[in-house]
Length: 218
Image 1 (cartoon, rainbow, N blue to C red):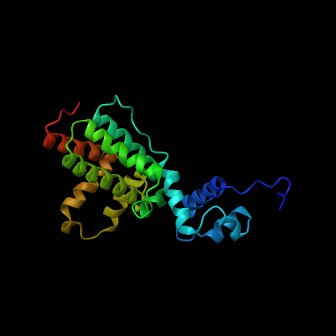
Image 2 (image 1 turned 120 degrees about the vertical axis):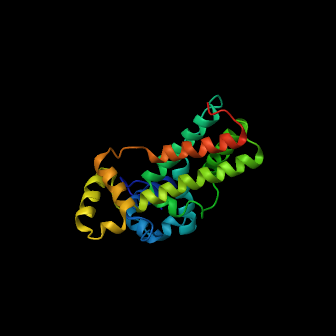
Image 3 (image 1 turned 60 degrees about the vertical axis):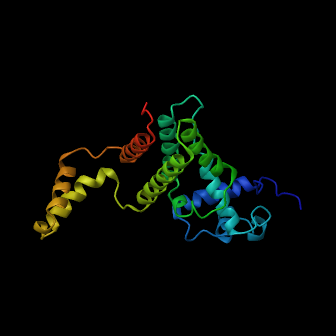
């Protein structure tokens, strides 16, 4: 069938782009082949020429995010290399918050595998044994994915922390029962909240594993 003049052709890349944009805005709950077809003003069956089913589409969407994760050069120190990979992965997951819910469930594609391999390569070439690299890899990936899920579900922007803390203290009547929490809220109210807690925690994880493995920090 000849293509209608002026109509953009339906390609796998175009479908994937629209699916990711839809998920970024609406999440995955309402995402379906039929809905993406509607967004593209195409028949649902035409999408099945490019993706066998929704699972196939979700696998491709995870790969779309995974390909954005940078790998460091071979001359980077192991600690800075891990920070670069982890920070890049965290940034990609923050930009596409829906991905954290399915990241560990989807098939391993080449981009996701490259990300996993890069973490292990940096650790092993940095002096970690197989067992230490495995433990460090697990801790690092749990931190990346956990931080992404927390960010996706947390209702407040960091800029709102101070006003939220103030509002809570003004509304909660039994503050004497939570003295340490109150101290924490007052700290938030009186201090800057722009600390990069993701990197801070990551560095603490790396420092601990470096010490266990007997490696230099820099």
